[in-house]
Amino acid sequence: MPAANFCLECGEPLAHKGWRVRLGAKLCAHCRQRLGSLARARPVLVIVVVAIAAFMIGRHMGTSAPPLVIQRAANSPLSDTPVNSSGSKGRALQATAGDTVSNPQITTNETAVYICGARTKKGTPCHRRVHAAGERCFQHKGMAAMLPPEKLKIEP
Image (cartoon, rainbow, N blue to C red; front, side, top):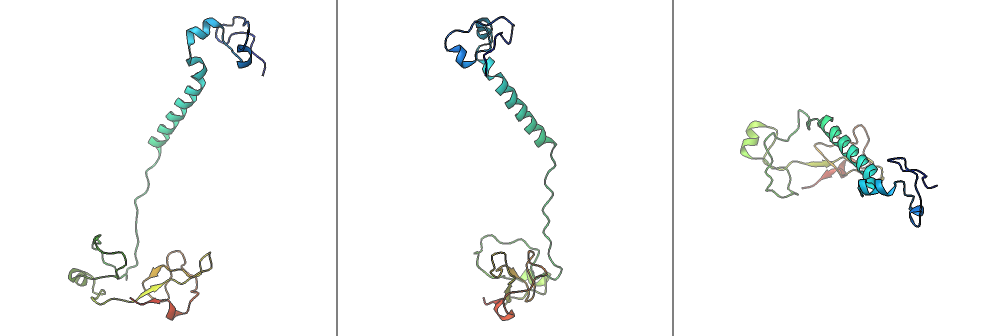
């Protein structure tokens, strides 16, 4: 890239001497002193300020995420009461006295648990839990099971 022959600020002819020719100095000594070190960083600062302003405007103008809606089948044995977070992870569905009054389908004895069993992309059967034999999880609705029905039941 050839060196500039005139100052970008004032238009004064530039007299290149020494290493300034290699750096491509585009300002005369007077303008360089007047503008200081900001002269080199000005284009970068302008780009950063414009990018930050565009980001802030985009965040302000954007729409918020829709509310999370979890749908369940009408005949689901799960109750609408809040889940007790102090219980262990691997426990089966437990019913309290209040649950049996609000939802008569839930009994105090443990119910059978089934897995989906449909073929995954990996080629293995899906291990997501479903409510009844022959049902599939949300991802594999309408697909056939790879395993026989007796292998889809999980013993508690």
